[in-house]
Image 1: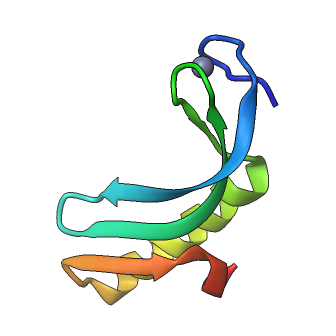
Image 2 (image 1 turned 180 degrees about the horizontal axis):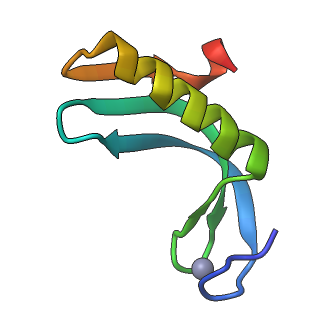
Length: 75
Ligand SMILES: [Zn+2]
């Protein structure tokens, strides 16, 4: 996969996604991604974006100030 920002090759990796929903913070660990070797841009595949949205939506319902979720355990 190529970086959308600079066009360099993006390598498969794992990242932590942090989403600030103002009243709560959702942290998802172990998210599979592609990371650009040049500019460190993080690229998610469509499946992962969808899964992240679902995780964030269910975290919203819990209404905890900070939710820390392990992607590898829920996906
Ligand atoms: Zn890049």
